[in-house]
Length: 82
Image (cartoon, one colour):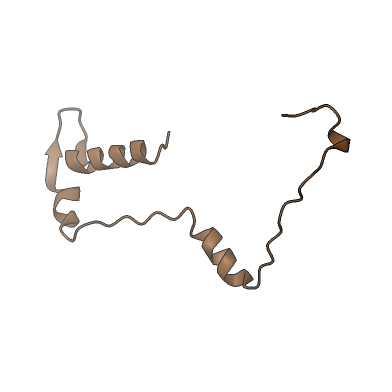
């Protein structure tokens, strides 16, 4: 709680400080902390895009399959992207 009564007179336990001896490993671990690996199957090329032009009636052709679009939306929801 902030602003405790007689805070200056209270006993304070200082935080323990850790001394790092391997800065390169520590820096590498910090970089990899937010790393996300995405593993996709080898047959992704067959179902990610249409092999032939598919017209949906709007005047433009569909480039990606419905499954590819749903996969991207699911990743967006899982990773909490806007």
